[in-house]
Every structure is written in structure tokens, then in C-alpha cells.
Image (cartoon, rainbow, N blue to C red):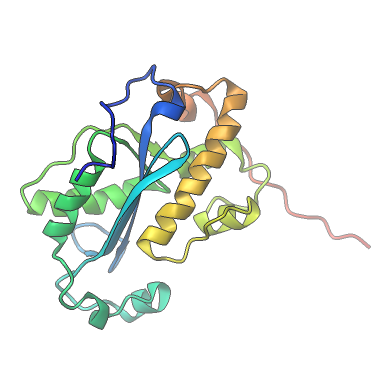
Length: 216
């Protein structure tokens, strides 16, 4: 399935309000694709700030879920028993992505797992444009927040959705962050997709917010 109502692929001159973004998050059994496996996939499609649809599924990783992962995410062996296979999850995720711009927070991590599972299933991810909200946050808001983790940003910016280490919840929080960062980017003349994609190369990362000084 494609992102609902997806128009033809956006180009560099497409106005941002006409671009379909699909925000992605995955949960895994560990930190390295190819060694660890998927336990959950979540994605949400947006255009013009409106949510068009979502895709979410638990995934049977084919191995036990480590205790530390269960403590962090709440995902247990019992929850993933009988869940779809990684191949099924990735195939349907790629259909949901369609030609949309793919967004994530530290997106390379999520895509490394998607690509690893796609490769095992004989599938290939398209050449969709990608936007990493971590890179954008480091250039647009890091001077006013204490850090650029998704949890820190969502609290500091008072985003509607808060991450919970579950895939769809984190995707929704990342989508809130994306829209806030797009608002900030308009101050740099960013109105079209190409300008948003080029922004991390145009702007150097901002310094971290200085620590608060103790007062008497």
C-alpha cells in the first residue's frame, strides 16, 4: 500500500506543503543491523501538516528479545510470538513509503535495519529523498534545547506526542518535530523540498546550549 493519496514523487521545486512525508521508526533487538533484528515498525504519512495514514506492526525477530530491550520498550517474547516476519513487515513498509520523502530521527539507524531485512527478502528500497530530523535539529534549535535526543526535544519544544520507545509513538513524535523544524527553517528561506534537503549542508551545527549558571 502506498501512503494514502500519495501524489507523484516530489521534486526539488515542490513546495513543502505539497510534499508527502512518511515518518519512520523501528524497534530492534540491538544496535547493529545484520546482527540484531526488527521487533516493531511504525510509520505515519503526512502532507501539508495533515496525517494521511499510518502503518504499524510488531515483528517476530526470530530470536529472543533481550531483557534490556524488553525493559526499554515493553516489547516481550510473548508479544512478538506469531507476529509477522521481518520480510512481511518490510515489504508492506516499502509499499507504504511509495515515492514519499522518508523522515526519521537518526534515520540512518532505522534505514540500516530496513535495508538489511529488505536485502534478505530480495527487496530493494527506492531512492526516496530522506530527511533526518536529528541533523535539522542540530542546525535549527540546538542552541535553545539541552540536547537533541528525541525525548529531550519533544519535552523542550512541548510537542504534542512524546516518544515511548514504541515505533508508532516515536514516529508520531518525530512528525511533530519535523513540522516544528520546518517552521524554523522558513526563517532561512526554506520553502521547497530541495531547500530543506540542502539545509544541513548550508548551515553548520549550532553549539549546545550552555549549562545554567548557579545563582546565589
